[in-house]
Structure formats: C-alpha cells, structure tokens
Image 1 (cartoon, rainbow, N blue to C red):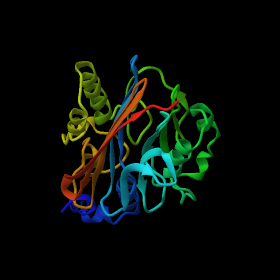
Image 2 (cartoon, rainbow, N blue to C red; image 1 turned 90 degrees about the horizontal axis):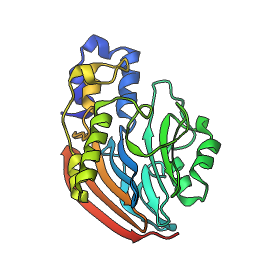
Image 3 (spheres, helix red, strand yellow; image 1 turned 60 degrees about the vertical axis):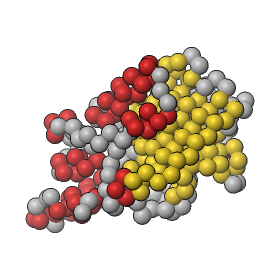
Length: 281
C-alpha cells in the first residue's frame, strides 16, 4: 500500500472525514511535487546546469523527452492528458520548467500549466517579456523558470517575477528561496558535484535520494505531518504516485547535453534517453 491509500491509513478516521483534510490531501498529491535544482552562470563555459525530478501519478499518461513532431526545435516530454510539458529546451538554447504551487482554494483553471512551458519554448519572446505578459489568473498556482539564452527568470502567479543572479538554487512547490530540506540540501549537493566534476549518471543518482528529514525540518503548511513526510524526499517511491522522471541538462557555450531517466511504480527505472546537440544561434 502506498501513495494516497498509505497516507490515509495513517490518519485517524474522524480526522479523515473533515473537508479540510480532503482538500489538503488532494492538493498535496493531485499536483505534481516536482523538484528543480539548478546552477546558473557558475561556470563561464556552462551558463545553465539543471537536475530535476518530476513527481506525478503513475497512471497519468505522458511521453518521455523527444523532439516534437510539430516543432523539431523543441526537446521535451509531453503530458498526454492536458498537453504541454513540464520541462524542455530548444536547439537554440531556450529552456523552461514548471513546478506547481497549488492551494486547496485553487480555481478550476481553464488552461493547463504545461502550456506555460510549451508556449515559451515554441515562441521567441525574451524571458522577462514573457514572464510579465502571461496572464497568471488563467492558471492554478505555479512557479516557472525561463531561460532565453541570456537571462534566467523565475516567475510565479503566487509571488513575484525575479531576474536571477548567478548561483545555485532549489525550487519545489513553494516560493523560490523556501528552505525546504530537499531544496537546500539538493542545491548544496549539486554545487559539490559541479565543483568536483560530474557525469550525468552522478546527478541522476543524486536525484534518487530517498531520505526523509526530521519532522522539525519539514514545511509548515498546516497539513498533517504524514502528508509532509510522504512528499519530503527528493525521490518519491509509490505504487500510485511517485517520481516519474529525472532530468539532467547542461547548456554550454556551444552544446546542449540532455539526459532523462524514466521510472514506473515502485521506483523501477525503465528507460533512458540522452541527447547531445550543437547549439544553434
């Protein structure tokens, strides 16, 4: 037993009957709890290094990263339920990635958040322009990273738009800079690997960290501690819900190196794709 059923079984029956519990459990698990670790301009030859996990229900249909048939410039996975994607890049060095920043009071949004990543990748807008002109009210809560080859921007319809300075970052399902253990420790681990030199296998292995922090280090979002423990690890294993893909991306001055490891229920690795592209300006 895992995922939704596992968490429910650990919470007293009278508490499970409350509408507050139902809303928060749905919010916690029905929205992807992705993690994006990245280093920005920490190496003069590599402006962007990304290591990211996508967490989702295993039953939600999706295609692994590949070049899109309708736009061979785009390399990304594909959500087959709502369309769009959660992370991708282009041959010209554009990059975008999304995490949900959900809340029980989110409205039924008319557009999939995956469209935010898709529209940036297939377009030509500069990152700042795109961030300032998207209509955030059309979507449930999100964080969005946008790199146009020159500038890296983080924007959110639950926060602000920020042009990022060089450094190491961790972004999950709260504001950028939130001191969630997997964001803080993850960014530190990425920095260690970059400084000592890494292969993509090293970062994929780093993303498989299943350690659960102590309860006093977990986020305080007014939700049962069982829920927070369930989604606290960098890598989530479950039969219903868990980490579906780990992606490593390096954009250098003249190449793009992209790797993605896919997983199924129980955390079993099932497929790996790797691409090395000449950067097209």
